[in-house]
Image 1 (cartoon, one colour):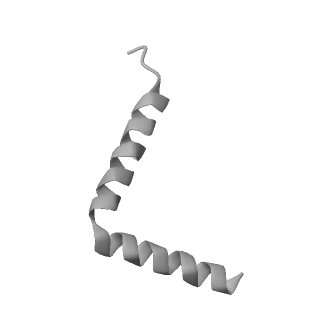
Image 2 (cartoon, helix red, strand yellow):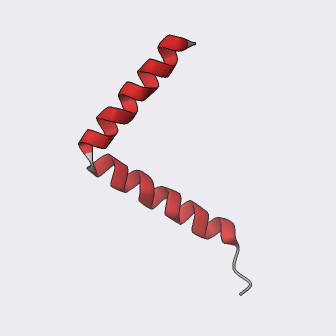
Length: 41
C-alpha cells in the first residue's frame, strides 16, 4: 500500500488512550496497579 504502518499504530494508541481516559473505573484500576507495582520495587 505504500503507507507507513507506524502511522496506524500511533493512531490506534491515541484512540486507546482516549477511550481509557473516558472509562474512569478502568483508569482507577490502572492507577492502583501502578501503585502496587511501585510498592513492590
